Length: 318
Image (cartoon, rainbow, N blue to C red):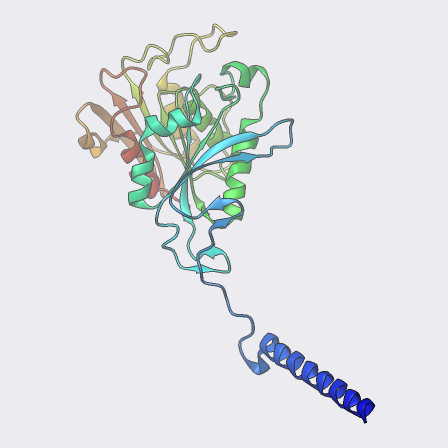
């Protein structure tokens, strides 16, 4: 009798297990329903990048000994997007802001004033760190140039990682910089035109060969009293290169030719601040704008970040 009871109980357990397995199978296959439900919750992070607003530091493997670092500022707009399966439905624009020589990513974050504008307008800002505080912009500058550091490769990999994470919009990636970082912004426009929609140059010189694969819009600021990188050319190109910097006109003429643009004409960009004298040229959605900061030295102009964002916002890829 006891043996019969044990057999009956064992049979009931087998039947119960089969029923539970059948229920799980119905949920997975849906019994003709829509299948697995999409996850709409905002994840805490994506590919190691927090989705909450604020600034965090990150490391990037670039295939060489050591690593490179950057700060990423995330605006509140990212978490407010609609999300599906761990990615926002609409990725954000990305601005990469490059510090000047002998400065750092933290210094550029403080100097530029991009964070508050990003929070208001809804775009990501990345502040990368140069190699020993410098960028290899071509014929300048310092350790990065002397060491033949592949900064184009580093910044391209940074862009690719944020794009692959679904956080940044590949059609709205912009690079700006100050001084040595401005020269690096030029180089990104020259050599990574497939990644960059527009650049912003503040007190920098074009010191690299330049043949972009496609047109790239540009907004250039240059102080008329800059002694480090003189507006009419001069100074010393690098610690081991006593050639002068080329004048602003060299970069403007080169960029205009590459983009197939007519001669720049006076523009109302100057109305945004009193000491700017600006001109611009545009064709087929591509623009070149040049603002001379009257009496300005080698410094980040007041209001430059807001003007740069307004320019970038109008010059994403179509």
